[in-house]
Every structure is written in C-alpha cells, then in structure tokens.
Length: 276
Image (tube, rainbow, N blue to C red; front, side, top):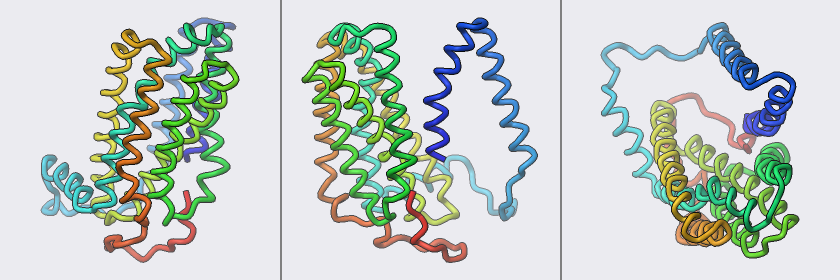
C-alpha cells in the first residue's frame, strides 16, 4: 500500500505538470475530481466484511476517543513511540516551509532544480516502501523507528550544513526513506500490539497526535525560516529530530513489537509474514 501511495506522489505532480502545459489548471482539477469519483464507486462496489455491532454495544463518540487514547497510553512502548515520533515531527515538519528558502536562497537552484529536490523526497519514500520495508521483521520495528528518526535528523542537518546541490539531493532522498520507515513502523506497532476491537480507535488517536504535530511544525516553519534563514532552520529541524529520537531510544531499542502484546479476540494470526 505504501509503495502505491508513494508512486502516486511521484507520478502525480509530473502528470499534473504535463496536463497544465497541454491544457490548463481546470483540466487537472476535473481529472483529480474524477479519480475520487472512481474511488468512491469502487468502494461502494467492494463492500466491507465485518461483524455487525449490536445497537446496545455502541459507545458514544467521546467514549470511543477515550478508548483509543487509553489503549495507547497504557502500553509503554506505544506511548513512547508516539510521543517520540510526534516530537520529531514538530521539528521535521519545518522542512516543508524551510526547503523553499533553502533551495532558492542557499542553493540558488532553478525552478527545475527545486522540482528535482522536492521529488527526491518522494522518490526516497518510494524506494523505502518498495525495497526496504518489506524486508524488516516485525519485532525490529521499535528500533527502526528510532533509527529512522536519527537518519531523518542527520540528513536534514548535513544537507543544510553543506549547501551543495548534490549533497542536498542525497539528503532529501534519505529524508524520504526515513519518513516512509517512520510511518510504517508506527502503524506496524499499533497493529501488532492493540486488540482488534479497538484498533481503529487507536489508529485514529495516533493519527490525531501525529497530524497535530505536523500542523504545529508547519506553522513554526514560517517564522523560523524568516528569522533564521532556510539553512539554519533545517539545521534546527535536524538537531531537534535527532534529540527527540535519542530521548526515546532507551525504550525503543530495548523494545520489541511482539513483547507483551495484548491478545486480540479474533482468530490467531501468523507473525512471520507481517513484515511491512
């Protein structure tokens, strides 16, 4: 799934550019709307197989939120992983704003150079999803999360400290690799350690925390980049990402996705194939 998503992130902007050049922006927007209509139709035709929830067993929205937060906070490994990743994302998200200043002012790159560097990040995500993630055993995921955070931070810091186009190109590919591994690791951990009956609520709670961190970091990216410049803003982002990952490392490096995993009420599932 991550491979297809990353491929879309690489191909989509390039296809949009061709459509805009050949037609205009409205054609791109109509094409985009059409893809969502096709997706909606596909979902309606597929249907979902699940056990119906009795009317008396339904819980209120606030209780569902509490269940999601509670099941994550009671698990030390998940609690540490989500807090560490959210803290790292606050710094990492500065990249989405600071890279504009960095590429334009520090690297003096052209429009084409800017496009290449932005695409390099999504190419890194695609490479990680297609070639690396499926080879990582489930029980390594906590270590992968810690290592990917360190890789993300170091790639940002080195790229900003050595403002050379080739260095930035490699660095942005590595940030994409780290980004993909981080997202897959946290999803694998939740899937492995949360009972199936509350797993959806756990994913919702973690998604809210991580998306909130992304919003906060993006909001900080503007003033930080304006005050410090793109290169220094990326150095701060890299150092903060490394620091957040290091603080959680004692728990993550000792933890295993399979250790003390709660029992799910559903049928037993094989552990070995769950590698991505």
